[in-house]
Structure formats: C-alpha cells, structure tokens
Length: 331
Image (cartoon, rainbow, N blue to C red):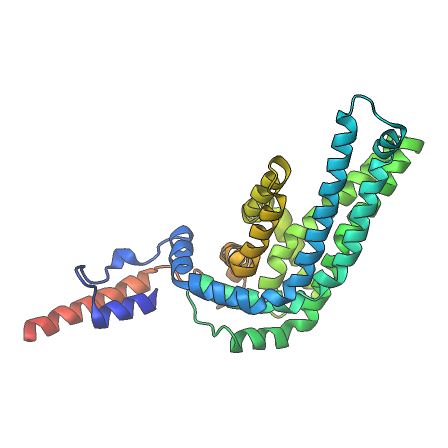
C-alpha cells in the first residue's frame, strides 16, 4: 500500500491522476486483492523455493490415487460384466478390505512426508503473514529466521498432523467392524473420531500463523487453535475448501475422462508453481482478521487492522496533500 503511495508521489502515473485517498484499502477484501496483486510474483518465488520439501508428499499421494483408481476401475469392469466370473465376484467381495489396505499403506508412507514439512510451513506462514497485512519480508532471510525460531513447535505440529489421517482411518475401520458385530452404539465413537480428526485439520490453519506471531507453549498453541477452529468453523472450512478447488477439478477430470495422468500432472504443476504459497497467503489473510478480533484486542498495545486505512492514515494523507498544494502555490 505505502510502496504504491510513495511511487506515485515521486513519479506519478502516466495518463492518470495522483494516488488518491480512496485507493487505500478500507476493508479486508480490498486489502486481500491488493496485496495478492502486489505479492503474486513473490508467492511464485516462495513456492518454488520450498517446493522440494513437498515433493515426497506429492509422490505418495499420486501413487495412492493411481492405485485407488486402478482398483476402482477393476471393480467397475467386474460389476459391468453380465457373466461375472468367480474371480470377479471374489474381487468385488474383497473390495472394502483392499481399499482399506491401499489407504492404510499410503497413509503410513505419508507420515514422514508430512512430518518434514512443518518447519517449512512455519517459514512460509511468517512471510505470507507479513505480506497479507502489507508489511515487508525478505523471502530468504526472513524465511530462514522464522524456520530457525519455530522449527521445534512446527515439527511437533507436523508430526501430529501426519498421524491424524491414519488414526482416523484405523478408528473408522475398527469401530465400524465393532458396530456390525456388537451393535450400533459403536457408531458414536466412529463418528466422533472422524469429527475430531477433521477439527484438527481445520485447526492447523491457525497453528502455523499463530506460532510465528505469538510467544506461547505448544499446548497453548494447540488449544487456542482448536478453539478458534470450532468458533469459526464455517469460515475456516470455507477457506480450506476454496483452496481444494483445483484438487476437486483434477479429481473430476481423472474419474470422468480418460485423461487421469494429465489431470494429475496439471495438479502437481499447480502445487509446484503456486498452489501451496497461494494457500498460505489465503490462510494468512483469514487468520490475521481472526487474530485481530479474538486475540489482539485482548493484548494491551497490540496493533490491529494493519494494512487497512485508518483515520490517522487519512489525516496524514490530507497533510501530505495540503503540503503539495502549498508547494505548487509557492512555485
């Protein structure tokens, strides 16, 4: 915001008037789009700089999706055969257990791939937090400092996050089998486990930005993030789903067209180029607003609404405008 202001103050705009007070962002929506426009090239650089740490996870997910797709195609062909053979019937009968085995193996392999991303996500959270509120951050040096200062907590968060999907899968299978053999009562812990896992995944949205913004222990960090995730459940769920739109599109192309490999390659290219950095920027914009509302207002002297136009900004702008008119009159 202020960089644009000073550039226009010194150089002006070709064929346009000077920077006006109305150009200052007055709400979060305006601030988001203005900062995204300014920082888009930086998000590309940040994403490319950190992409290597996410390659193992992308590889595991692609292998798991490809295996699942091949299995589902085999089941579909077996069901569509009017003269189903005994082997085809056995394949259909064993399908649930085979699906479980594929998912279990994939999620086990994903544990180290997810765990190593924690410190990098902390560094990205610091850079995007600053950019989302119109503050400066050096891509490499500030990223490195944020990783150095927060790597222990970040690694703890990513380790827990890496085992949550596997725990959800195992508990869903275990309690589902118990419900079939011992009564419907076991559906309650089955659904509860799934709900707790989903809440944790939503709470991670707050954990890395909170980690690089406030000084607090790991337990306090997790508790506060979980409370915010529950309190702002529709909003944080909407933010996470919005960032999954490219994945949903790729999934539809993969399952309903013969271009599965092209869809997976396009999705991998998106995340290698901009996907993760863009997601971190969206989450930073969202969490900055939530922190201002629920945390910063409770901390004495903590600034709020950074990057937004305030009455003080307007007074300074008016003083600058008056000074320029006085100089023009003297000239």
